[in-house]
Length: 340
Ligand code: PEP
Ligand code: MN
Image (cartoon, rainbow, N blue to C red):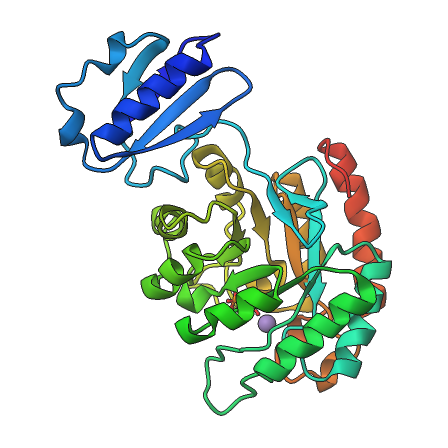
């Protein structure tokens, strides 16, 4: 349920409600919005069935939450969540400024990573992406450099100042990746790896959660709910294309998911047009559409020499193309009241 407080409810009144909820073994989440404060209640509500919360001082009304997800929902928290990234916490995903996470699909060597890192930074990317642990569809393809790849990412961060986002695929690696990376990525193939979600939910690092290949919006939000329930509220949702009957593109970019997610949830939403389309020519048009649709940022694959890429070369932009796209995106961003 959510408890909506009256305009001007005092701190004492809020504390009193919070205290009573805790006394009954439930967890209150206080959200101080621009308009008014609301308290979301998590747990078995039968224990407060007979508590007349609606007549408590400062309480305006008490409402049930009908959706199966609670912490991720707009009902629970009306203001947009800002996910703060990086050691200096200067980057805020979900605010007026858009953030582009760019880099190679996989970290292939320090030298190749540095070339791309410098290039995307010069073009305006604010976060460096790169896979060290690669969950590839075929076991016979490049599986990533693992821990060595993570070290290269750390080195690239040191040299460029760009925070890094990288995927974690195994619960046994969560501690290691959380120590090194600025954002933990949960890939599409692991969106419903609940044990991994629980583990990542216990870290204090922001998470980039990619939508599962065949996940509904409800399943996607419930996956985010797993992490938030564990205490990690710094979650960024990423639409990266879903599986449909269409084979012309690698996946089908569900652009409507952007406004749908933003209305159902307070979490920031970004779009990955690289994996969504699988074709570099389609990346810029879909990136523009994503920003126009209200996305808070993008994830883009960039490679200096896509013909030689060890993974996803066909959907990777060369640095000059990435640069040109970023220039175009600035105009779209301005048209929808955002900054890039
Ligand atoms: C990736 O971003 O490196 C990746 C593997 O993407 P996805 O999980 O969306 O396929
Ligand atoms: Mn890739």
